[in-house]
Length: 327
Image 1 (cartoon, rainbow, N blue to C red):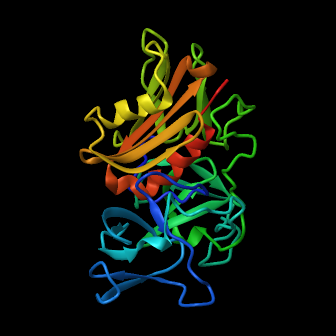
Image 2: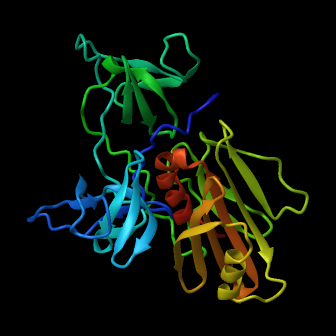
């Protein structure tokens, strides 16, 4: 039973893009292969850092062909807009990750290791990982590694428990449609993920059940709220009748003019859906709205979390958005 999981950890699941996350793209691998982060909006300003391909950043300000950006570590500067793409970098779902195989210090075969809440051998156990199970190593704190398991749990294991090997975790499900239309996505995206389906409107989404717990259902049965186990993040999913017969553009403009979304840093629209994302006060938000039934029904997925949790929740948000559909 997972007791607590800190969303301050950087979860690197093989997913792509949410709103406030942009990334460096389109560089010439045969050239310099970096984007200069400068002190001002122009090539005459000093280079502060060299940003490699897929470096994640967020756009703060626009000046012509230049963007003032902030990196995940808090560094800010100006970069040429041509090499900034919206979303988070695409990740190969068959990427190779460290695999738990041996105790590194002695070479002795490791049958299992305890995943713990904190960097102490007497901290609460989140579960046990067997030899051969894949983990993503998120970072190191002394003699402990922060890891993400195939089941979606995050915790600490001793550094000696991991030997580098290959283990495709592949959390990207091939049977999930990102179109928002009815699909055969009844199965969870991966072990550790659960599919919620609203019985009234058929609004459905996959979510990591190790990270989020459901609030009690509302009396009208139109959706559900979920909160992270540490209370820092939450998401809602619901359906409702389009009582005012609003168009997609009308719904989007209502959202933008509602005053709830202080800053829209990313926006995208499809034939029957749109996404808004940015900052809501001191929180990051991502909102996806879908029309179905010829515009008769509105389906909404929205997630919010602190900016400090952005590296952890950007990829999870994208996986959830991709699974968002009606059944």
